[in-house]
Amino acid sequence: MIELRDVHKSFGRQKVLTGVNLAIPKGKTTVIIGRSGGGKSVILKHIIGLIKPDEGQVLVDGQDITIMDDRALNQVRRRYGMLFQDAALFDSMTAGENVAFPLREHTRLPSEEIRLVVSEKLALVGLPGVENKMPSQLSGGMRKRVGLARAIALDPEIILFDEPTTGLDPLMTDAINRLINETQQKLGVTAVVISHDIKGAYDTAHNMAMLYDGRIIMSGTPEEVRQSTDPVVRQFVNGRAEGPIKVV
Ligand SMILES: Nc1ncnc2c1ncn2[C@@H]1O[C@H](COP(=O)(O)OP(=O)(O)OP(=O)(O)O)[C@@H](O)[C@H]1O
Image 1 (tube, helix red, strand yellow):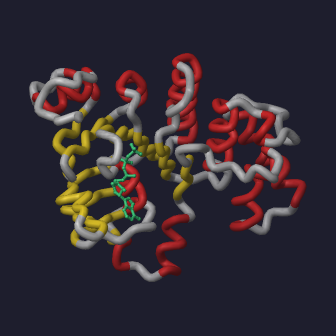
Image 2 (spheres, rainbow, N blue to C red):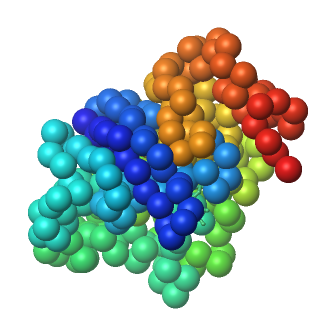
């Protein structure tokens, strides 16, 4: 469904992506792992068309979004939902208003129907009835859930998750990973997840890809990653400071 072909991207002199090739299958969960600052968020931004590559193509259903005009790109973007790293809720709006926001921006649904969709999505993420709470009254895990409810408000075909479990305790991490699984299965969406949480990746991914040194050095099922003999992959998934990746 989504394919990056030989994507290169530099910021000034800093080469971040140096030929990324990645195929993201439809209706499955793909988890991208890799070091902090390695360019995983930059990959997501290419997928959603927020950044254009210096070289290469980003294909969504066979169409290269890097050469689309704004109008065509906006149409493609309507198919995406995104859960940002810090949930990125609007603090001055209630949870319900946050979830309603994309519906008000992009649809002409009457208020009553918006209310119904909001309550349905909040129930789907396990937070029925929190419509009137302010983000500051919610825990980090709950805020992520509200962010997820907002990301699925427009029934996207593709959901991008930027580090959905960072900063959560192990139990909430597991709960959010399960929720990603359930949401992906219930809605049949294509999910792309950026994560440092290797255990979570093994649990949620149909497909894993590792970004290293500006390229995808390995892509495969969790089982294939687990059995990889590549020393870089092994060092990363086992979380060891010693090995070919220079840590400090
Ligand atoms: N718009 C930009 N302008 C300049 N540099 C940028 C820009 N976006 C990203 N970078 C640089 O690209 C590199 C990769 O950033 P990115 O946020 O993609 O990393 P990441 O792998 O997602 O890291 P983390 O896991 O810590 O979130 C960083 O060095 C960052 O400073």
